[in-house]
Image (cartoon, rainbow, N blue to C red; front, side, top):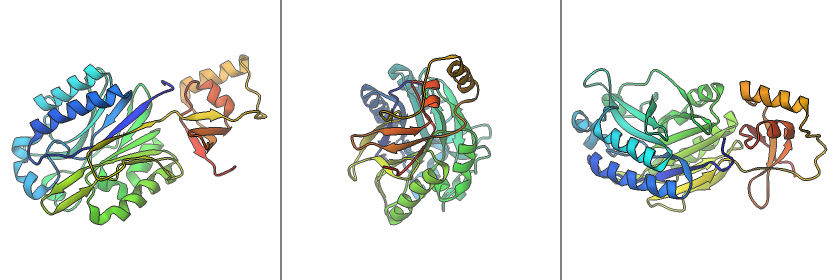
Amino acid sequence: MDNNVKIALVQFQSKLNCPDENVEKACGMIAQAASQGAKIVCFPELFSTGYNLDIVGPKLPEIAERLDGPRIAKLCQAAKENGCYVIAPVATEREVKGVYFNSAVLIDDEGHVVGCYDKHHLYSLERFHFRMGNDIPVFDTKYDKIGIMICYDAGFPEVARLLMLQGAEVIFMPSAWRVQDKDIWDINVAQRALENLCYVAAVNRFGQEGETYLFGGTKVANSRGTTVAECTGEKEEIVYLNLAELHPFKNHPFGVRDDAEMQGLVESVKAAGVNQPALVRPREDGGYEIIAGHRRGQANSPDLRICRVSSAT
């Protein structure tokens, strides 16, 4: 894994029932994020159509996406041109005509559709327009194993836990979360991160859709449930986070030597990953300091992705 992997969460303002216009704008924001070094760019729930299903729902036969359709192709081209992965949450129509899913499509940095996650916990009117998903996949990228859950999925522990048990190190959470439930947003993002000892990257929509106001609040929580990056206000913007901010503390008592034993550990990590989490603590000047797990960090160098954060000082 690159030691300087950056994610970008796009707090997007959609125009209702205008997927061509929204996708065109999204392609520009992918280029903007990539110019800042982002390698994974995530948009919010149903960004290409808007969320208000009183308005969007009846139009799904016209605006739902086929995975081989022209708008997905445009997003694939943007991912390829900018050398980054894109998580594109859209309404999809797949094998059965007239059956729609509230989905997140993962596109790799070569412009290929890697796969799709379909929302499991459908909220309110979604039950009348979308079919519930069947699978909870984890995706291998060049940088991390990642998982995706969508909005109301975060209100329940099962999806996040199944993603973690399959090895997801970052869970992306595209959402269209209304302002009336902002307190629950703050709780759920922190809770899912804390109980699974992983990052949760929660990207919310922004804007007014009829009587529905989507407040933004895009944020990333670390494995303590602490917010480590967030958007600065209720507006369209992009928040960035570097996911490799771990630093060994000076004069630690652990022997880290490049010997035969270390080489054996390197091969073990290559084959099975880091099975025992390292212990880290926040540094005053940013990033994290490794307390225990220096040999695992060296073996997995330049990346130590799995850690437990301590409040020790």
